[in-house]
Length: 290
Length: 279
Image 1 (spheres, each protein chain N blue to C red):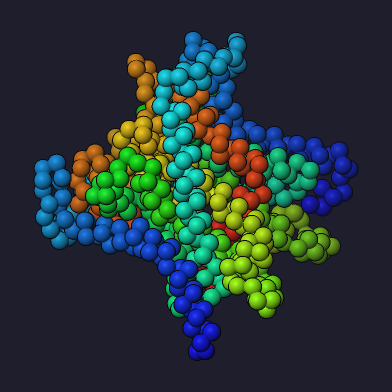
Image 2 (image 1 turned 90 degrees about the horizontal axis):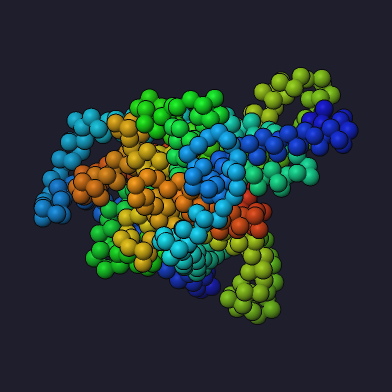
């Protein structure tokens, strides 16, 4: 290593140091701390603070409310990601042919994505209003209590989340579609391939890598989603929309059980990291991360 | 595609109008919220008719005069701008080092930073809460800026390192030969080329900070630091839910991000795409 290289290395570390220190303090340190917290019985208002080992996890393993939250989280994540991808691909295909109205179309598409999630939740609460909501009006004046019916609340919540996040999937797919060279299609058309065959044999296979990225990226977000359900349904009715994040929040800051709530947080963390690992592997296989 | 190319201009435009109309239909919830915010109180709970008999600014007046919304807008603006400034100030040198300098363990660092963008806030909220309490920062802008940096900084570093790598290093080498130092080369050669990427990163950071809810909800207690999403989630109703006021407040909460995106659409699209993939 030459003197110059050593100097550059030192310089690089100097530039990196502030960011790494902050990230260490704000992500690495708290994530170790939360694991430590999850091994304690900690209820500040009663002055309880003692080490308990895996007691919180043992409690969760036998806790029906926890397993319900696991189920709700998985149903929510799988259903909303699946719907987003189906709808997103369709929208991307429709956008592909656009010319002069492209900017307007993209602006309309991005509108739902830009709104704060809390705004979306408040908006859908109003849309789902049993007597004065637009949804029931559009269904011909029924009085369905979307958010109050245990069988309907989760689908209603998923619909709101899909509405909010589908534009992101559509945008990713649209960008990929623009990158497909037109001669690929011209060759197929010369061969007289029917439109459906072009879609299933050429377009969708070419979309597959980006779809995988979009699915994993969205799954990461869906597993840690909190705002929409917390504001729209608050986990109710009867816990049918209580995800792990809402359960963790309630345990932490409403039941004030810092240890148990942290244990739920650690479970979310582990779930997300499994998906993140798959995501990183996909990215590095596609050569995005050197 | 084939049909579109053969079709005359008018038919093609008709096809485009159909797509735009469908997207406008998709955005109906937003328009409905705007209409609700302008609907007279007495007509809120009667549907049909779809359209109100007249439009009124009354809900906006109430929200501006009687709710915490004005203060919350100020808080959100302050917190989001400070978060963005902090993330850019720390992120630019870090991204530069990762993209241009022989940093040890660079691959592992990049991996850790991407993983950092995936951190679930619910897992770090309890330790950060204890930290803020220990530092006496509860209910301050500082607490929110610091907490938001935990997701803003990895995002900025990752985006900028990617954008920097797209710029050919030969340009700076030429500057280096002229005897300009690294900082001067960065300022005069690299920065102008990096500006669009910087705009994308700053825009996304601002949007994410503006929309952030969990930290803001947990670390704030009064209107001294309550941000817009928190004020909206806690919007008070005395006897019944004030749907018109809530609609007006949500329009106000959405206007800044919408305005930014209308003006900076291309930076948003670029940043979003770069955030999920790099081609």
